[in-house]
Image (cartoon, rainbow, N blue to C red; front, side):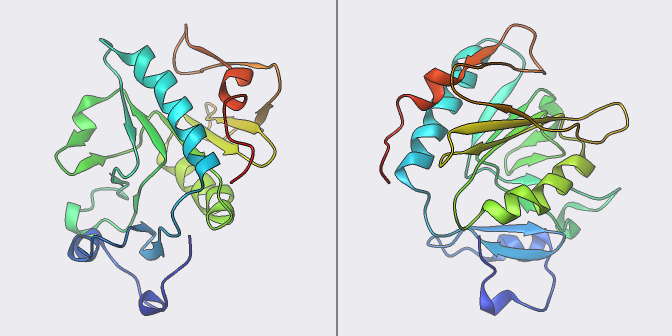
Length: 199
């Protein structure tokens, strides 16, 4: 994601964000900095997105947790900020919420239990750096980073000190046991074997 030239050298709030109603543009705010959510994801990105979203959607039927797909606004306040003053609004590719009180008509306010980001050339640096530390400080219990190019999935789990442990990389024939759910296991072969090999 690139910062739009017209939004450099200043910071913004959720109130500003709501005023950017051009249907051809999507934005994220991280600590008040605006990031343009373009260009559109690749076909391989969307293949992986559909497969992983489907795994969680099917598992969570008739359960207390809910999975959401981008675009879905997740507001991450600092302390007791009013809604309009919030400086961070992200749109994770996939987010799972088990606390229904965090959900409202505009999306969600507060950290999801699990977030999945699928890397694209235009988003990789932000997903690996800014969002890593953002999600850690916000208290996201599990952060998954999917690398379509290398066909790997890295899982970061929040420890008792609210820091992400060293990432665990899954690929090939590995089976990933989802940390926030006792009985959900995802086979990497099922994730990567059906994606298109050309963008």
